[in-house]
View 1 (cartoon, rainbow, N blue to C red):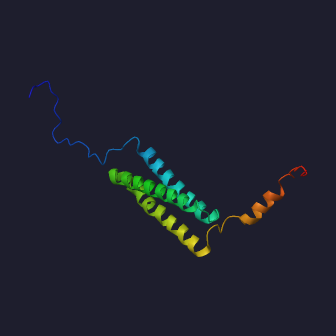
View 2 (view 1 turned 180 degrees about the horizontal axis):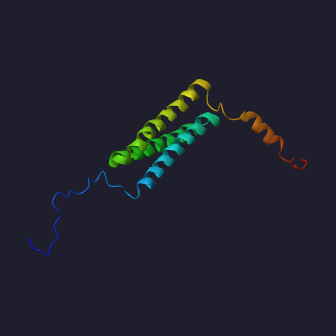
View 3 (view 1 turned 90 degrees about the horizontal axis):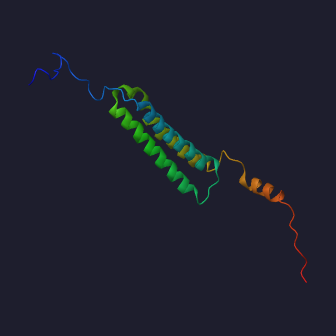
Length: 138
């Protein structure tokens, strides 16, 4: 080697890639947490607030995909960055646990238990519609 090329100091070791703080770590963790928490919220709305409808399986399925995708992203952040494992371990268990509690609540109490009585809402909406003029038949 040439004397012009810098050499590392004796005893110097470069930092392990898992120990280096990623500047985007906070944003990655925030985005993954937001995605999974919105999935839990949407699952709760689809199962416990809205009435059972033909769209309920679709809304629930999309919510579960959001939960799985967000939880997997949180797990990857914790796997790749050792210092963030204190934050990611509880979140990885919390999102599926909350979704399981929502599904169990829907099974025990029934769908739409937290929402209003939708029959009364529909009747009130029909009563508030203005009268329609229909011409007399000739």
